[in-house]
Length: 184
Image (cartoon, rainbow, N blue to C red; front, side, top):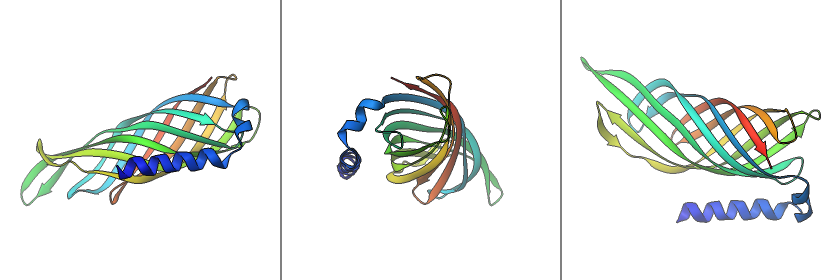
């Protein structure tokens, strides 16, 4: 309940900060990207140093040339590693995914190229396993922060490359991805 109140408050604050007349010039967009997520931390008591294939889906509203709001789904894939405890080797597997809600800020460099930044809340849950036994199932709401660039091929299709850092409890995961945005 606390998470949904925070999400609603964030969305209302962003939408009221921009004049309604700016909606007409821009509009909705869908995005999809795939990339690499890294994790080099202790996650809920399980140490891991691994990479995985991550993907993200987004739905956003570009409010004007400089400001937008977006929500999405982020999956980090599976982080797997082996750890030595005493004389025994244990296999670890961590998974996390969740939903994002945040704002984007853009700086057009030319007609086809823009830089952007993004920040918001990440509503996630995970699964930490040690030798296929569930050790914990953490869930939390944390922040994310990132940036990147877009290159427009047409009025409706853009290539996007970005880096985003997600907070997962006391751990951070960096995701570098490449994808497309389709504007309506």
